[in-house]
Image (cartoon, rainbow, N blue to C red):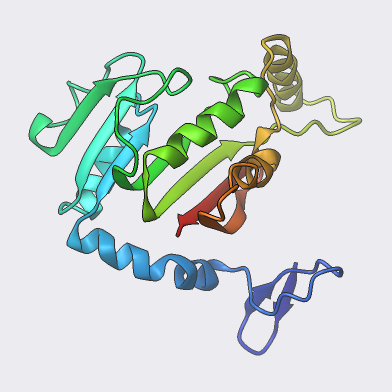
Length: 212
């Protein structure tokens, strides 16, 4: 990481890249700012694997003009979400979402690291791209379980146990590092632009994809 002392902007330090622009929060807001203004006007939003609906609850608070949909293999949302603000559908993204092509302006997928086998990821990425409108956006957020050598704390013992459990189930505990590749493999028709992959904090990555 490189910081410009004049204005405290943060730039990448990848020597092989000639990219000019910074990678900090201000730059990410620039990349997605126009789209966030659309949120205030109202767009159609899908949360895949919505679980309790906590992410949608936050979004409804910030952007009440949007239309919200969520899907999961079980419904645990009715107690916390008002049905007039949200439409739930039973669905398994692995076998296919119950929505036509080009339905949603914004699709959110997060924390599927413990839900998908490694070979299922390409199918899932293809399916969420299918239901996203041209000009829409995908948001992918995943954990990255990294093992450090020579550390014997309880925390790292738990991480090693989780890493091993993922592997035993056919899951990839470091799938976050593969998000860009998984998305770009579905770009056969140059349908979208991969904006960035952001390390939000230690062990957590977020990707933003704009379909064109």
